[in-house]
Amino acid sequence: MTEFDKDLVSIQEARQLTVQAYEAWKVWSRASQELVDRVCAAMSEAAYAAAERLGRMAHEETGYGVAAHKKLKNQFAARGVWDSIKDIKTVGVVKVDEKKKIYEIAWPMGVIAALTPSTNPTSTVIYKVLIAVKARDAIVIAPHPSAARCCFEAASLLAKVAEENGAPRGLISCLQNISLQGTQELMSHKNVALILATGGTPMVRAAHSTGKPAYGVGPGNVPVYVDRSADIEKAASYIVASKAFDCSTICATEQAVVADTPIARRLEELMKQEGAYFVNEAQANLLRKLLFNPDGGMNTATVGKPADYLAGMAGFETPRNTRILVAKLSQTGKEEPLSREKLTTVLGWYETDGWEAGCERCIELIQFGGRGHSLIIHAKDEKVIMAFGLEKPVFRIAVNTMGTMGAIGLTTGVMPSLTLGAGGVGGSITGDNVTAYHLFNIKRLAYELSAPPLEAMIPGEPRIGPAPYEIEAVVRSVVEEILRSR
Image (cartoon, rainbow, N blue to C red):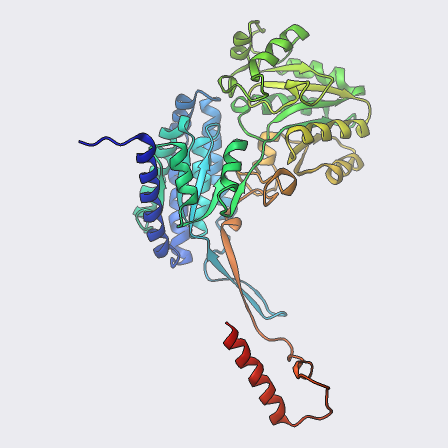
């Protein structure tokens, strides 16, 4: 029996699944709104019911985060995302402008190639399948190799439920034989209409390099500014809980506190009471060496790990019930590794006197590694809040809430999503929370509102009172010329 190399098997699987998805899409693109919504609602319920099992699988396979927290993310993806899109019209005429006489008609993209990360694997699969199928697209999942089994399980569950409720076979699928070559084949396949990439910078760059339309997200080096006007107790509780949630594997998690000097000591003490351990300089140096490689790349062995586990890896001990590690910093940029994005339970700490200085420090952090992504602010002074909103080069400014929960739309009114666009400044084509709206196009049926300027269309000098038959002849000739030129 002939054995094929892994990359060849992966390439062939990508081709087969994409062809199957395209054939299924040709059927699904003609589905009624009623059928689309019935299928999506059934998938939502099935995913919600399986949230705990899938969360446990994701934790066991990747070694990242906390199983119970991954359950919550799965529930958010299943129910929170569905509740936000269930009333969106995605079939036929979706909007009518009576005044302008324009009918807007939804038109699906086609086959979506969906790249998913190891940090939020099953929740991202659930979310992407729901928004794709709601938009009448087919979807092929390309999981991170370290999360292949749990992603396949999530996708298979959704595919089974979808088919049982009337969706065509092959509409939802997931690569099992993972390789770089296979993923590249999927993204570049002629039947793929759009790439939806959630993950690290290399993945997103690869998606954009295919020449296909692609939604990609950049890194999130998210600062949290705590103003002197803030509810300090609430800020301390939220920051620690958010940073500890699933061991900081959501890209909108706080990466550095920027504390206003008058409240800095009080905030520090309150965060300690919540389980924050402020490391000394020697311990900070150990963390610098542990978390990052010499080239600045993240040490993946430290991603999504509890604080006490990280401390043990670094070579020091922490008090019992330590939830996060906090390092006091004075610089940003390459000379300070801990000012980078840290997808684990380590938080930077800066102090600045006044919101203007805090604003500048936040911009430094954003420019170093989180352009376009997110920022958190704790304050009661509306002038300060608005100043941050107006001046920061990010597309999500979450106010008096947790970064993890606010930016994804669980505790705020932004669209629930697990793909957070970073806009042009962050290398993305949108700054939105990507959802079903982004996965279908709009055709516009436009009726005439005013007569064309026929006289201006007649060659030569304008004449007064042309005979009707002359106008008709000119218009007819113009139309014929247009038709010949097509």
